[in-house]
Length: 123
Image (tube, rainbow, N blue to C red; front, side):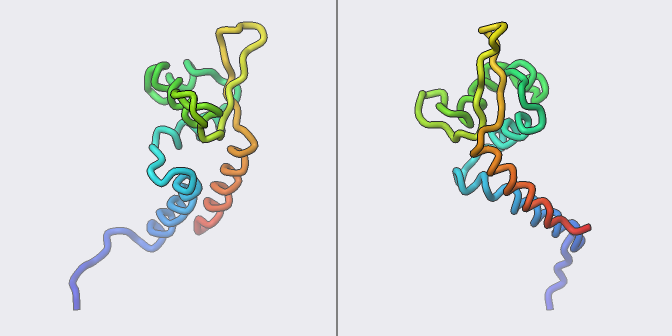
């Protein structure tokens, strides 16, 4: 018989499984989905209507990096190829230099799947 003892409790393992289930929809989009894209999507989901500067400040990255992330998870990626379509950016009518990000219908479906997975967390 092995003397191996797991370090995590059953409850901790259940939380880990729930998080894995919540991240699975991202892996279905792209099996190597970067965590930065997941984090950027969740930032937009939590605070729709903000711009690149606000999201960049919140994430601790440069606006240039955040612009690339928003493009890649948006309609068209930085190479003008099809993006993931999870968010879109709309031009501000009062300041044409600014854009506001929002979750697309595809992103909303993804968010619903994440929520359903997180509901499996034990109480």
